[in-house]
Length: 251
Ligand SMILES: O=C(CO)COP(=O)(O)O
Image 1 (cartoon, rainbow, N blue to C red):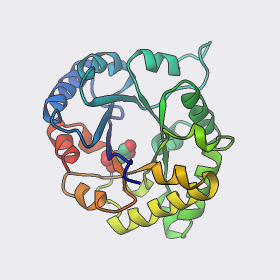
Image 2: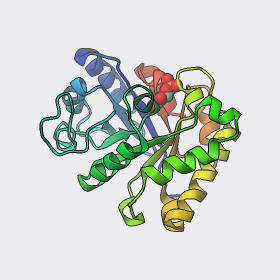
Image 3: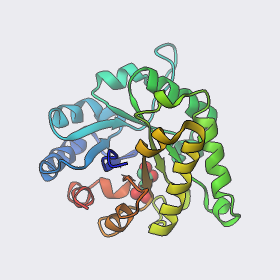
Image 4: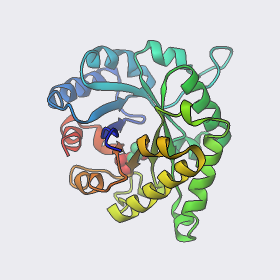
């Protein structure tokens, strides 16, 4: 259980040009240079990956991408492959973010293909799941998450999921300023860990890192991280400013 190193990840979404990304990454690297007990990652947009990779190389900040396509190469205009991300310096890739599900036709099936490809190409997946406000109100949170996990991880075995990270991001808490309470987050994280235990066994459930995402800020990160099943955070808006994100990393 103690091998779950806290993980604070920043999802920059569609923000920052190359030069803006370099500047933020340079500031961040300095601000978190003292951090050894927490893993730090940033996911800039595709166009800034290589440049940010040069900045974070040989530092304690890792690089992630926000999406990719599951085929290795081919006539897929506008898409990016896992090999391209790896060669741009990425270690992680965010898969199935609710914004991709909502605006870009991502489904549990495409998420499943992406997780499989990420694993086989040694890109570490951050698998995003979460219920909408309507689903929470109608008390469907657990069944929705069960479906997202079952379909997203379909056909995979526990030994392939050693490096999987799950990000629980309730859609109603993303960019809204409405954070889940620490009790709400803990309740869902515990549910997810039990679900993973049921499907993939105790060993994986104990070592799997589950991040919380949705309006994480410097003033709510400590209480979230104090919960036993919250292993980190996937931070959107508050990761765009190095100083603010640095405070979250130093929770
Ligand atoms: O979607 C998120 C991270 O992936 C959360 O975004 P906010 O932190 O801006 O709510």
